[in-house]
Image 1 (spheres, one colour):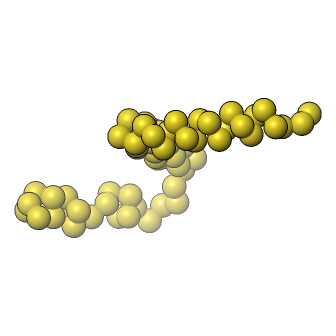
Image 2: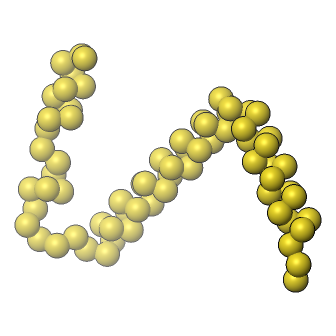
Length: 69
């Protein structure tokens, strides 16, 4: 493991050092960052596993065709 990566991981999180409760704006910002990273990870998975993506699309299409209003 590179020393730089270990130092970054072991560095204290600035959010942990604060005793004050998290504000709504901080929570929304953190949530938005999480959702961006999640979307990016899903897009990467879709690119590297095209067969799984195609099968998922086919299953979704079948669900939509059999759905009754």
